[in-house]
Image (cartoon, rainbow, N blue to C red; front, side, top):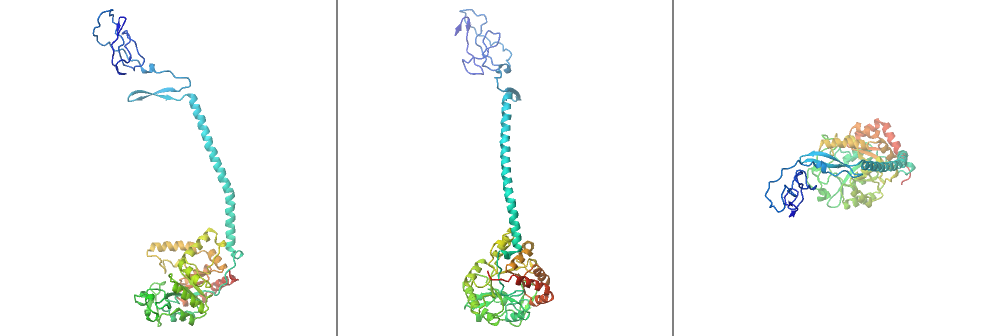
Amino acid sequence: MAWGSLSYTPATSPCGGEGEACNSPRGSGGLVSPQCGPGEAGVLGAGKGLKVGEPELPEASPPASPPIPSRALQPGPRPGAGSLSRSQGCGGDQWRSQPSPARQSTEVIQSIRNSGVHAAGALRGSVAMSSVLYYALPALGSYVMLSIFFLRRPRLLHTPWAPAFLPRLGAHRAGSGERLEHTLEAMENSMAQRSDFLELDCQLTRDGVVVVSHDENLSRQSGVNRDVSSLNFEELPLYKEELEVYFSPGHFAHGTDRHMMSLEDVFQRFPRLPMSVEIKSVNEELINKVAGLVRHFDRNEITIWASEKSSVMRKCRAANPEMPFAFTISRGLWLVLVYYLGLLPFVHIPERFFICFLPTIINRTYFPFSRPGLNKLAAVVSKWLIMRKSLIQHLEQRGVQVIFWCLNEESDFEAAYGLGATGVITDYPTALRRYLDNHRGAAQTSEALTLSSVSLPQ
């Protein structure tokens, strides 16, 4: 293209391809395009004295002019816009925008507003929490005071049970530390020591006889690996000549009488002697037969249902609801829970007996777990939970008689009666009778506490 005496030669520059306008070196007669970057050169017209009509001659590229600083090409700040700041990078100078003073002021104001909103929210939460505490704390304090008041005076809310007998001295398995367990000889020995009641266990033979036996399998007692339920009553073997006392490891009981007894024979020989009958499994035939024997011998008030399992106890109560019954393990845990929640004074207790192991015998004469560490832990925890005089006294005032088992040493007798227990179950009725005779104060105190709770049945 010709323009006067000038000619235009397209050039290729770093800014683009052919036909794009680029910077021409100043002083060479060309035009400068502000769109190209620094150091980029393109030729718009050569203009070195060429006349009109002269042919264009090839010519070397003009010498490069000094690069134009990019700072000179940056547009100035707009009103209200931010300023620019430079930072050095690996690619040369880099520019970033800085907020203007007006924008900074706006951000500060917004931040203050946000802080105010958060502060207001926190203040509202604090006021709400204060309101809750204002009403909750007095209510909680009143509840605690009422709970303590009625824990000490339960008869203001409940009519205590009338005890049919005072179980101060109970013979475990009829006195298994001094004679062979559950034998007639053991029962007569316990009666000679003026035992107040017998603790018995029952099983059922194949021919439907209720037999007094702790174990279903006869290996420990008789050395015969047969179950009671697999034999008729007449086929039951004799007891061994000596049996180890379970709650006094290393001690053995002996006796001349080695015969197992039926529950019917026991009721016939001791018609007015109170007894606790423990059922260990859900055997409805056994439960119904025991309930029938109790009715037949008119022993409803002096025979106690006992079992560790609540499922068994429900069956027992259904078979004979007139018999008093003791706490099961789960009900015992419930009792301790409501005591510590402060609810015990306000709940109904249908049980008349709280028969519980004394925690101090764990890991000494009673080993419920195979690991010594677990026994030590059980001893500490159960002692802290159960051995509370306020709990024992509350139960006694409501007519629930507290009996600790199975205690065979004088220090344990002292601990049990010191807590206010009604009675103790032992393998050694002679030893417990001696203690009671020598410590009449303890016996009279427990008897007075029990008699003071006598009233009409609930």
